[in-house]
Amino acid sequence: MNTVGGEVLVAGLGGAGVGLVLTAPISFWGGIDPASGRVSDVRHPEHGASIAGKVIFLPGTIGSSSASAVLLELVHNGHAPAALILHEPDAILLLGLIVAREMGWPPPVALRLDRGNFDRFSGRRVSVTSDGMVQVEA
Image (cartoon, rainbow, N blue to C red):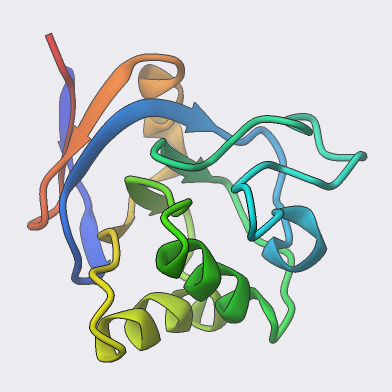
């Protein structure tokens, strides 16, 4: 099965991009460069990878109250992911998408999906609908 439904955490635009499954939790503050969308944490397994325009699958986040500001910056400067898929909701991170929407900047949709579903999307072209359907594109 190449289509699964996720729980919409923050409504936003559906999108498509290559699936980037992060193999370790990440802090957006200090872990993602808001100017480029690249993983900047040198200790992270995906160091150097870009999240811009990708459907990113997050196994977890490392909290910081500044994470929402980094995600807001990514949306504002055009380096946001096409969609965010989280194993567990992170209210502080997702606040960045809510604020972006309030500022008039269309955010990508954010979903919750069981981590056991992540690997099937790694490196493949993935589309995510605004109502929470995630599928591998043909």
